[in-house]
Each structure stands twice: as structure tokens, then as C-alpha cells.
Image 1 (cartoon, rainbow over the protein chains, first blue to last red):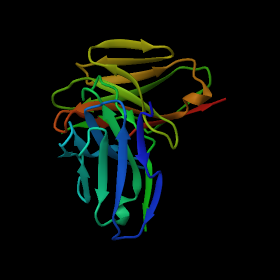
Image 2: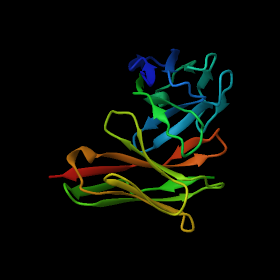
Image 3: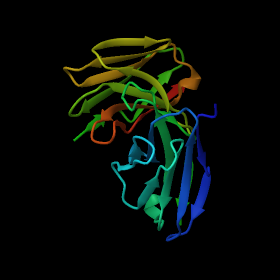
Image 4: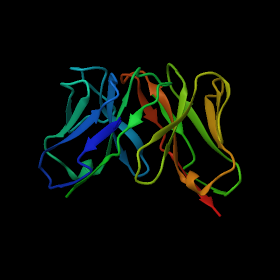
Length: 114
Length: 111
């Protein structure tokens, strides 16, 4: 099992450019999440999905969109990148979506917006 | 709302014991989880407490007091490889049961 994978690992964007981050999991998990991590801020939830075809906003959704067309994939889109979106983005998945249920994280995507 | 407080940094000596505290405020408490993250790496699950008391997993233990809205992670027989950030987290019932993380405690283990 590959677990949770993220593509790309690194990316540099200019302000106003768009991009899509791909998250894939092979554990048949229902729940998937996108977090961003900034220095001293911990992990903050951007969007999440409780199953194929569903998405919902998290704590910091502005400037991002998501889609979950297939159960194993969760895409995060930036329509018009801004320097404030420079961050490390982590995707995670879990089976039951409960606090006792381990969340499995991908290796992260390091995004710089200039 | 929800909030979690942890110390930002802790330093300890190899072989020693260290305790990382976490206090939380949340509605609808479902339990407290702990995650470890090495520099540049992905967070990994360490432990979970739903009920009061101590849960032990090898060198790591986690404690919860629901009445005090307080928990801690205890690391024994510290090793250099334990140098990492440690996050406590509670369930965010308003966000599809995603986790609400504290800002993390950076643990430095010195020789």
C-alpha cells in the first residue's frame, strides 16, 4: 500500500496563477481532508470530504476549491494564487472520521507564491 | 469555539522523561489525540484518550482529565530521534469530524 500520496511535492507559483494539488489514498477511506501548515500555526483545516461526491468548508476555505469525484482522490485547487497561500499543504484520510480514528497524512506539498 | 494550548518549546536530555501538556476548550468533547511530526515530515498518530486516565504505548503514554479539560503526553527514556513537534488535537464536530490541532510543542532532545 502506498498510503496517502500527494502531487506535486514542491511548486512555485506567481501571484494570480492557478494550480491543482492532487491527493490519492489506497486505503478505501471515506474521509479526506486538506490542511495547511504555517510556522507557529499548527495545522488548519481548509476543506474536507465525508465521502465520494461530497465536500465541505473547514476553518480557512477562502481562496481554495476542492473536488472528490472518486473516492480515492481529493483535489485542492487554487484559482488565483496569493502570497498568503505560501504554505505546506497536507492531505489526510481516515476511515471512520472519528477522533479515535487515526488520520493518515501524505508527505505534503510545499507551495511558494511569489 | 475550540482552542488548545500547548507549550511552544520543551528541551530535555537523552534518557530523561518529559511531559508535554495540553489544555483544551471545546464543545462536544470526543477525545484527545496526539500526533508527532519530524521536521519536513508528515504528522503521524501517537495516541488517543477518550476516558480519564493513562494510556501507555511503549515509551509513550498519554493522560486525560476530562474534568480539568487537560491532557499530557509523557515520553520516557528519551532518544535523540524523539526530537520533533508534538500536537494535541480534538475532534471538531462542526467540520465533518476533522481534527482541530494545537499549535504544537517543539521537543529538542540533547545529549
